[in-house]
Image 1: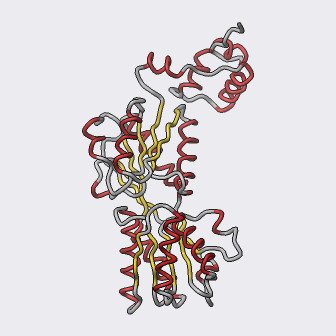
Image 2: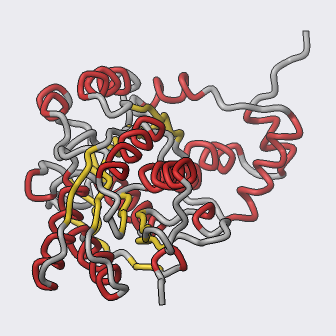
Image 3: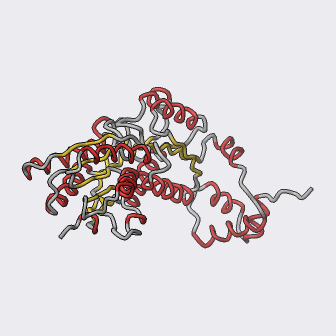
Length: 334
């Protein structure tokens, strides 16, 4: 049987000390990029993998970051997870990702399962406005950062969010400037703080503009079911001038509905969405969207959880970013 390579073998192959190799894999101390590259190349050549369980038992501290999100179909969350994984890897952490499927019961079950790994920290996008109370009750020692969806005013933890009220105002103002006289908002839930804030921003803008009716259709998180509900709505309300999808999934549902009903934006109806994605431009009629700074959000979330882990800050911090409206042909009738 071939002997399994050891950390000493990696150090010999890389021409570095065993301490340097250990620091590269544990992330406990900074190692310059050239030395880290030599270590990774040597490990790959020898087929060396670190026994993280044994390492964590010796140190009495895991190098794991738990991430819990409500959906893996949302492209914003896909990008966010990828960025967190990249930052964690650079810092010597492993990431465990779980999905609550927008279900509060599943969310609690997933949290308890994740806590079983004794993570160094948790980054959570909750199902609704708040992080489940059981987390603070059962695991007050775990550093937590809540991202998106959460209401900062109700949070016991650091938060990283968007000014969604302003985002709603921006997209509504744009539609009204392009002669929208009735607006339908397509939402996944009325229990999600960010979506409620967007709706409030939209309603605030149209009040100032005068007689522009706004309706909200809560269609659920499933794109196919949402598309069917939207089709029913448009059959009953053919006078609708514009649709706003409050997530990229809802925007995709709207496009599916338009295709099935033979509706062409912006000629027949204007369409705007949230969470800019490549597919929104890979169309004959690109989609107007509210772009959120996901890279900055991931950076802030990682910075906050890192500070909590290192105990560098004991004050609750609420980081709020601005989004950007990108005007495209789906809303431009002029």
